[in-house]
Length: 221
Image (cartoon, rainbow, N blue to C red):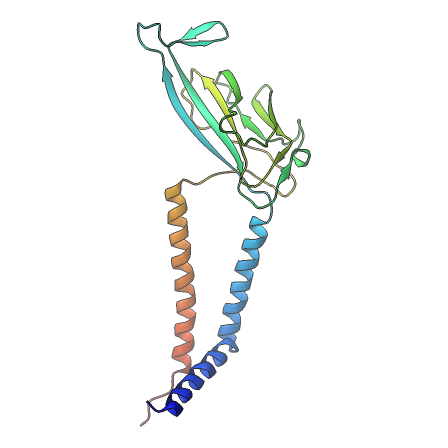
């Protein structure tokens, strides 16, 4: 193939790309991209608190002395153990001093009036080793206090009750943290990512198609 033909094609492609980028459509898409990237960077550059819950049933063996559930001097044939985990999924650490204090909006696990917690405590095996945390029981909640919660660190609280209740949540606020949300399951995360990518591709494809259609040369008569 003639080198000059290749050069002309490349020049036309570069010129077409430049015309697109400098067009109102190209400028709009670039601006939208910058806003999305900037918002994402702003979102993850602060503490992001998420929580998960998992409830399991614990039963003592019927008629056997090998395993018994014994709490506060009393045996229980069956209990429900709920593990509530608080984690920081952002890129900035959260200091305990930046959390709302008791009496205001501390980080806490609300306990419904009908649910009686027999025992609660920090699960040291599931809690990050560099986190120093303690629990404070109030009339209607278990308050979680800590020194620092660094990115990717977590605190897990175990609670035992005779009541089969699996709707526990974590509430509270802190500096740069307006609310604590429940973490998505892997399946929910996968669907969100696929949906977001598909939506972005469709959005950009639509605008590029409209641009090409508007600038397509008219057929010669």
